[in-house]
Length: 223
Length: 372
Image (cartoon, rainbow over all chains, first blue to last red; front, side):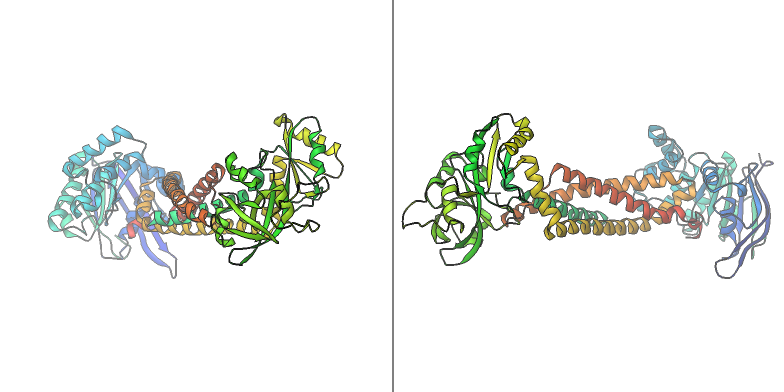
């Protein structure tokens, strides 16, 4: 499983031109294999989030290419890219980005709903996912009442809805204490190992290193 | 908070539309109260109060026309009122036949209307009592003649008109300045009308109300120098005059439009703020790959819920202030058409404002969620 390339990044360059040009990525190339957990480390401003955004189809690079499962996503139009993201990626955010007025289960259900899975099927699938992440008792609590660790586990469950080929996580442990940080790291590591999901994480949290099979360092836009 | 703002904006719109409807309805009250199918008047008639006299003898001529079931006179004149405490007011004296069936202000019962058969007795709308400085059972003076309050009506006074004094044809004829030749010795009753006495309208009941347009045409052919209008035409002429030709109609239309405009701005601002507050959530959906139609659908659903809830609450609020306004003679009228119009406007305003506010989310960079 680990031999197949899931994401292929070639000579990626990104220049922001709002005031004076900022070269965020200066020719990044990397292959990420299926079921691999890749950790991209680097200081603030090194280009980690830019790289993750381009890999995840959220940002179009100035030059270079990204191919996911053989499809070059950097050539897709806006709408096609949105469809591609919906089918193939799950996202985990630093600030959780849950819908606070909804329960944990409803947050996950929504992720199924937007993929066309509705009603009882979506409810059952979301509860199963939450149970797998040890959250069955918290499924009916509003997201705003959950602890940071619980919120991030709900966010992971939401990212898993629709069975994506890759999960992209931006600083997933930065707002968590040591214990919860370890739980989240283990979950992500297990997903890669047991489900074969490709995991790409950006972080400057050394605790994640233990779970990652592949760690790269990004400095000043270069690996 | 957002709902409060929407309720305020929709209430503003509802009250303005209801005020406009009430005003429009109020201008035609005397016509709406009559059961006449055809109104006969001078050719110069512009609206109910803006007309010239015709001779009382016209009533008899109209009664002779085939298809006429009943014809009654209605007079209208200007009178000066002096209250029991010598306070002055100008008013309109409306004379009709208390024994007739075609005009009955306030739909009073027969025994009550019969009170107007007494000389110098009149009825007036309850909202006018304080203007006339008058209480039940008191008397004043109209012109130089005594005037006794016989009974009080409700919902019979147009907001745009001077006080209507409802009385018998004979008393009205005596009160109005056109009857200068009439001299009333103290205690004597006014004499019956003669064929040459002035009246303003002949109210006609058709044998076949469905053919009132044909009857109006027949009357106009038979009697020279008069104009015959169906009830609908008479209503339209009076309403159009007040709504389209006077400053009052223009001002109320403008206020209703301003209400809609202010509503749009308030609701737009509220929804824009609300969407901004949830920008991160919408941005997350966009990052996940949700298409624009889904995002618009979410906001349309939210805006529809807000519009409907805001509309129901605004109707309740408007109904609650209706009674207070009615006591002051201001009619806040919520017609089914007006209610539907406000609902449609509330939906258009809320959904439209939501769509505009959603533009920021739709046009936003999905990568923003990784930079938050």
